[in-house]
Length: 385
Image 1 (cartoon, rainbow, N blue to C red):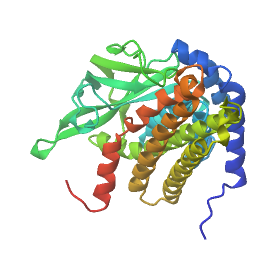
Image 2 (cartoon, one colour):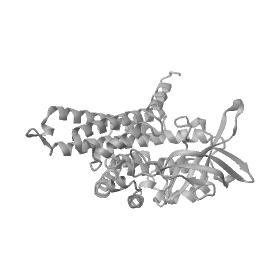
Image 3 (cartoon, rainbow, N blue to C red):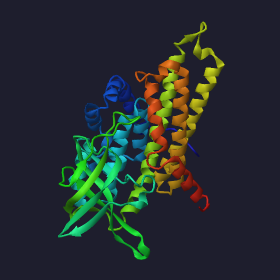
Image 4 (cartoon, rainbow, N blue to C red):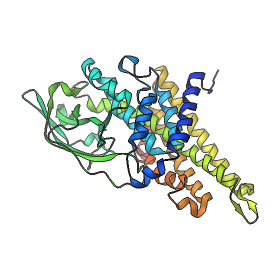
């Protein structure tokens, strides 16, 4: 029997986060967004709620939950604001999860408690200025010298990498060469403040304006040999598996944004009048919102299915790619339609749909573009290219 109803524990979490998003995030986030300011106060509150530790073991201060719990949280946050949602998404799925999945007992003991509490953030340094989607074209290098890794290179578009509470960045770097000339890529933990590790000024972005994003550079940056994360030469493979999970998280963010557009439009069309009638009485508007709800519903089912496979330990790469593709499409389409329904008000940043419109586009780009998701789906269908 197939049953998509959430059990009591999941539903209680979802409702708690929904209430927090509307009571704590909604009243203040527009100011943070306009100032392009990271919302430390909200992050601290979410840390005290245990949101950053949801899928991690209790022995490290985590909630002992799972990835579906994280996705439900992200959806509810993104219904109100994507910058706050992505701070949690990147902090958990990209920052702390690699330590949990591949770290030594010592690395977990050192880093996970503060990451689970939200008192610290970690970042994931994969993308490079000249690489973009082609993460295998890594140019950052790390060589062993006297028991230390010496790292030189740069990373771009790295979320949560320059906040006052960022404690580490895990970076991929070329550490050797395999037979046939292929690069050996490993993952190395670089604590914030390490000499030779510098964080550029924050980007001026179209959307996600209250999130933290920077370019990073490494010049003769030395970290101890034991900062290797996971197996030598397995860094790229490790992070591909992390990206499968994080795409699921980003799919939940997309669903949240799409649902937020529906929420805002329903409120607006019941109040706004044109030609002597509330605009929600016009069939053209009704059909737009019906299509928006249908897209959101479909995308939610896609990430629910992918999450269920992940929790059962079944292969879910194709399902995560489908969920990410469908949800980013839904977010973009709904944001465009919501802006149209709001008319001139939709073009104003003081209205949530204006922010939604700006935030939606990156969902088709980050953590694997929509084209990459189609490539992954095609590959799983046995098509070569």
